[in-house]
Image 1 (cartoon, rainbow, N blue to C red):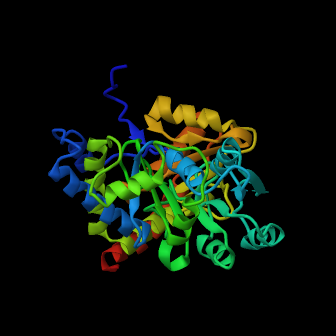
Image 2 (cartoon, rainbow, N blue to C red):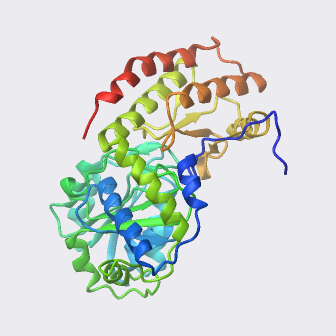
Length: 393
């Protein structure tokens, strides 16, 4: 379909997210051979910068796959059929941990958390006490389907007192919310590049602590392409075990350079301000933020009573050129989700709120006071944004 001159496309979905121009330029650069010295140089630069984002001294391995590929590697490389693992299921992606474990013959002990809430670390502690032979606990840092964020530090503290390893899916949160991997004692971090790290889909990441590496020695699950020992030995030689996504790596190189230039603390604070402003605007419009522990890179909003959130999503796309996401499974038709992560600045939040107000009016449910949501957001943005420049690592 040809683009419409009167409809500028805007991407505010939770993934893929908008890709910055400097990343797009790198994606279109002449292809480099993946076994050449120059690509090895780029690969090692990217690897070091990923360690900065993940906040770990361990190597971070790049897998040509969606983030689910790295999730699968976190099961198949750590465990054997018949092993026990705890899976925290508080959304669509938490449920995926349980599905992957089951596929590999691992006994999944599920902790079901009401959608919209974060897991209580005390529940994990109690489950571990009842199941001392559990080898791994699979969690999600920010559950994209619901918009919640987990207290990873508190969860790691609980798991760190046991023999189990903590595995966390940080796909949407890596680069958008704090995750101090080594400092907190998180053993395995799984991520992807198409969310806050602003590249197109196709690259997954994984890092392992020494405690987790010890588990890999006993793992009997079948694996070949996702055998992390291959990635470890190859990276030691400054290469990859299989053909990598060369130009995706080139794009990631530019994204991570920008991340380092902005700085970890400033990036985290930027996302925090955007999250605070978005939530303030939503509430000022008389709407309700869905999650009880909201993630700063994503705002999930309950549709007004009697409205189908799917109609809001569809109208935003068809009339205003704005792509967002609706709810999944039990939340289908109930929530709509705006992402403000990665390549997002202070102009995006007022636009999202204004668009929401216009769509609700289009659908016969105007907000009580026009412009109030944008005003509430701007109050926070105007107060806090100038202070970003003074934040350093």
